[in-house]
Length: 91
Image 1: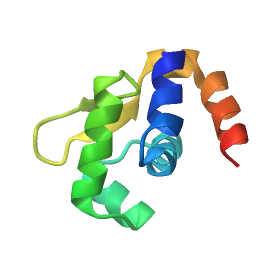
Image 2: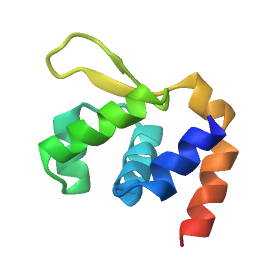
Image 3: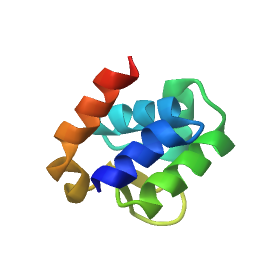
């Protein structure tokens, strides 16, 4: 997970947006549309980042296909300190 977080947040374009999504979902679960509105990003942009985060076990979807909510995974929570370290270095 540590390597995945470094990759997702620093080695690819969009790391800042993925960090913002993780922060938002840490506060409360949201669906893609809510995230788009909350972060003032396009819906397709949010969906792209959610797919990447889901592929790397950072977030998981719950509920049905329509307006499914996204949650932070337990795996990510075990590595939250790495996330915070990365954010400090990004600033």
